[in-house]
Length: 277
Image 1: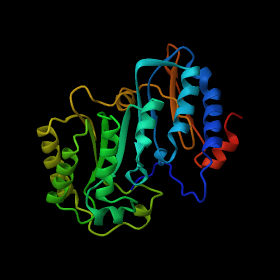
Image 2: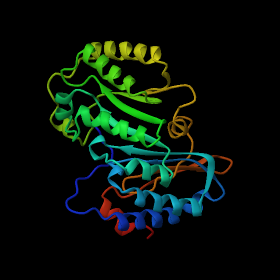
Image 3: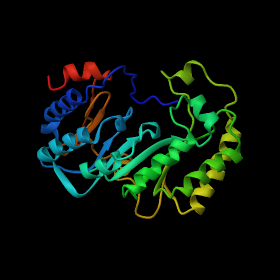
Image 4: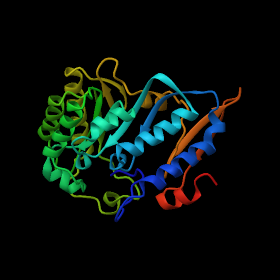
């Protein structure tokens, strides 16, 4: 279902070597953005929460020494609830991460297993509470709907569980079967038909609005003043650097608004070998 860049790894992850490669990659792209102000940094994935806070801090320090950060810079870290650990969120905050995005997807444990997620609903709630205990009040919860065998009541229950955690932002996506994913190759049984999926979407949109979440793009809903700066930049066709394995960047320049798009090697090792060359 998710075709974002993700790779399984065995043994110790090469955190330091990867951060070195990120910095080399950033240095190579710097001439594209001289003089510009950075309004957001988004650590996406994959599972960036596998990286220790010290690694995130090192990259942010390197980036801030090379770029002009806006005073109200938004720094988001995508987090898999199955990787959340006590004490990490305090250190992520100290490193400069001021927004967390939790990839929960559903609070139905059977559905989580079918999706291949490594967490259960209890771990998802604990992860959010760990972040709240560390002082995070600006966070997003990702949920999906039209899951295999999902009923309207189950989709409603997912939202109720999420609302109880008081996120400032909700991402509510319909399950789609993307090429180059396991679900595309072997579609699961029981995916709701278009009419059922539409009924779920309409019902959930009403619930989100009733809970104070205003829709500001296709799948994003936010409390007043809590829209994601990063999301808004995409939707307004803004520019962004893509740093890291599988990253995509879009930079416009000149009076004719020439657009340069850049893609980085998808495999982490290939990216590390090529970064800065």
